[in-house]
Length: 393
Image (cartoon, rainbow, N blue to C red; front, side, top):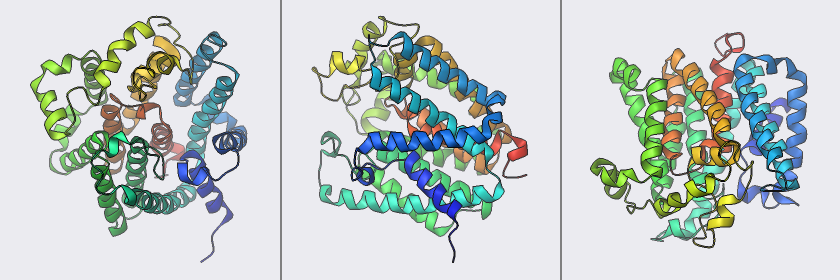
């Protein structure tokens, strides 16, 4: 069996866009080397497809990126420095190149991509198992701060959720149903999530499972309850309830946290962290503090070592680019959800359910500003947001 150069290049690109901590720890210069190599590749991806930047949907993404860059410039030398400017440029290229890349793929390229995802999923799951074995039996695994194969507990679970979703998506598109290998890897990923005591991961898998069940049993209920407007509205309300600690007065949410997810009522200390955020954010509410800022870490890490970010996705967006950036970000999110919901099939609803899982998990994490989030956004738009380039064309 011959392996094409394009397949190998695409595989390398996936590894660069979804970096595994244990793989890249061996590269000289570590993350900086990855950023340099990735930036060069991203520029070469964007240039030949420059016309795609005029696409209305990508223009929304560009608007968010521009606001992020403006915030960085406004806060330069005050809250961010030269290295942060460099990271902002790479981050912008990273987001933009993924949208351009996935919107430019033809049907043959998509097949190569999903074949490569299978390879990456197997490697990452096997690597995760290997680096988790020494901690079997540890009752406090969430307190150890371990970097596993992919990264932290949260990063590992988020990455595996993305890879398994893409694996199943490829099965639906090319096989019509899940393959045995995909089901096995799904079950292993769920077991890893349980082993890591990851509440975020369990919530994500529950939403994926629930929505796939509803899709088969009651499509009408699914379309009424989980429309983009309702999903966005409920998620925003939940963010307010959690961040301002109103949830402690709601028995159902308390039960979900303490009994179902087996977490303490403070959500492992996040409620105390959230109480400090409004006074910090008030220092720059319109434009935020710039990408990669350390405002929260500088102010709060001396109180608790793990308080190095807002631990809330929308909070992180607001700290990075203020209320103007948040508005642009929410427009992008709504646009992606609407593209998926308008197609309304078992494959689009699979990605849609991952989005909802990420949105709920993002209330207590930064998953909605992670590599995994931006990749699934770009894939969703590439597959379903441009009819002339659709996989169905």
